[in-house]
Length: 461
Image (cartoon, rainbow, N blue to C red; front, side, top):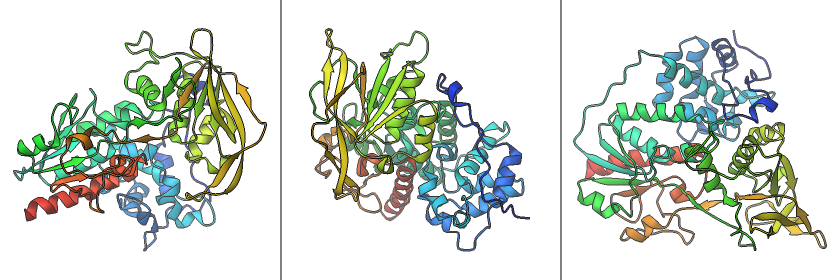
């Protein structure tokens, strides 16, 4: 009998005053009983509107039906037909604006907890000891994937399942891309990412780290080495700054550097090889998910006061609602409708404060959001000793500058068609390298689309 409760089963979590002092995962996950109960809220609609909201088109009603029947292994098999990273997606995808936004149950109550159920199924699967992964028979064709973030891993996984010999080239010393350097441990444990990568390796995917494509090897050299196609999923790791005075002071970080030191280099542990400044009062400039991650990390590193400084109001915050709520619960202070104009030095050339002005919202700009306008005579100084800039990123120009005939946008994004094909025959691209910084699931969707296009290209070659 269906569960007609108007509310989702709540997600068990660490208490705010406990979790803001550790890097353990905040959300603890559903029990089997909770998962079955939540799955029974699904009406198994004939039209499956939720699937239309999923960038990788997971067969959502079917997998939820298996969960409702207690067949968790069957549910995982259904999810894995479409997604190579279910444990990741269940944690970091913005389900509220994608699959769950289309759920019929959301009309008169809360939608089914699709993301929470996907996470449960993936975690249940990963906890099993007797799972066999069958490596497909090779079809004799080689494909190179540049970057081991969500788009690259998805493309690699889909191609491996088709029998391609896939090699992933990763610039850093650890595979996972933004999943390991950008998203904090308390949102996405790195053991989860490694488990997903190990699954891909079992399918035959080779991963080569410390391979900066454009320096160690070029894309042209990869194709000369026998790779019949190349997928570029190198992300958008080049940080942007505001261009205001004082951004070169000690104690000013880009969010990329700050999060990489914390997440990839484990600077929160005792005696780290890559240390980080433990500031007392931190300002994070920006309002996206990355800003929330940086602020929550700073709090866990021992900062007494952490501010989110954002030039628009809360209604315009681009971060997920859940991330904003978690940040507030953990004691992050939101300084909305404020904008920095200068970072001030102290006697030792460290950050000694940040000069800001108050803002008010005017007419909508080209993005549809109301444009922030400075209030006259509203200048004030925020007492901080560290500043983290989280105002966006763009693709690194290295691949563009070392690949003949590869066309890019003025801001650096690789130009690719709806199938991921670039201006170079046999070279495909997707994810943040094409769109600029976006979500994990959109990058995965691009990787999935490109894998199908690469398969078609090689078959017809």
